[in-house]
Length: 213
Image (cartoon, rainbow, N blue to C red; front, side):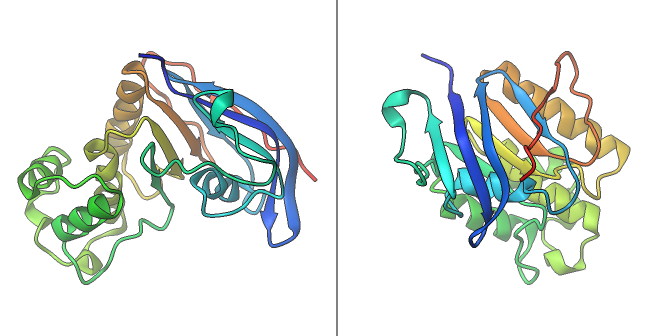
């Protein structure tokens, strides 16, 4: 089976009609992980949300797998079944428990998993004792780990991660880096925003600079 591939061609993105960057082009193949650095407001999150289809690009094309899947200029392909997007705000309902949140989020992603598997994953991440507590009662680091558990549960080849290490302690950061590296070694690809570099065991992290307007 061919490895997944993401091609970005002459992409311009922004908020409304105001462009944040112009003319971004790069390719990312299965087995690769790329980091997008930059200050707040430069368009990092907007790029991820555009690839997800949550924003329309102002110009350019996004291709997934091959040129045959290319969209028309200014459109995005429907990649919902191919990707897992973890935003910087975690997207958790504070009134629900980690198990309930993950069950709901995986169903919304059309990737339902058994509650037992969710519980086992939370145990693996050291969250078993808080699995039945409302997420609003959890620390910022615990909420981040709950949100990141979607990556461990998902089989999506493309991971889009917005500041994934935010609020994580050194041990949790190590687990995250191991998971991202394992995903790439298995043929997946990941694109992440971060203010500081992450060290992936046995891997070189690419850097993709956003062109300024």
